[in-house]
Amino acid sequence: MAPTSPPTDRRPLVISGPSGVGKGTLLKRLFAHGSGDEFAFSVSHTTRAPRPGERDGVEYHFVSGDDFEALAGAGGFVEHARFGGNRYGTSRRALDEQTARGRVVVLDIEMEGVKQIKSSGIPARYVFVAPPSEEELERRLRGRGTESAESVQRRLDQAKLELEYAKTPGVHDKVIVNDDLETAYKELEDFVYAPAPSS
Image 1 (tube, rainbow, N blue to C red):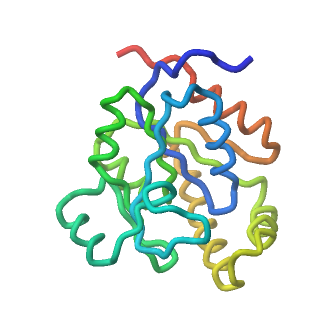
Image 2 (image 1 turned 90 degrees about the vertical axis):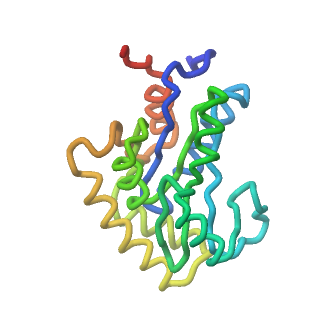
């Protein structure tokens, strides 16, 4: 039975995993579970162009390269990285504002961002979503039909690095293999709603 009260552990939730592994689907279910106030999605800044249907300030804050660099230089990001030729970053101010409201801030970020947040000293919980196999991940990526063969290959190369990093002991608090969606979601929900550790 799904929990009916908000999570007691309010630390930011850092979700990572290869592109195409199903992080977005799992997070949509998590957000739909509550009343809408328990969680806040960290909307990243990016220098990439919006895809059809994406809205500024909703999926991403779309900014120019110069604006991104200025914010990064001023220490405005808790993490930022380059991926696929574009820059992505998590705003420190947005993270602080949502946390102050008592919400669990959810960050869907790449491996380099995970490393930066770990070194920043920000208390957080780390979840890695893994594919059942590299072959299945490739099938899912190619099945989307939204990217070129070169782009898919770049994502697969990156996935190998992320899967290797995820094997490092102590990097993630929880690794979820997204083979069956229902099982994977139950694992995520159980982790998110686990009692907060006593201080």
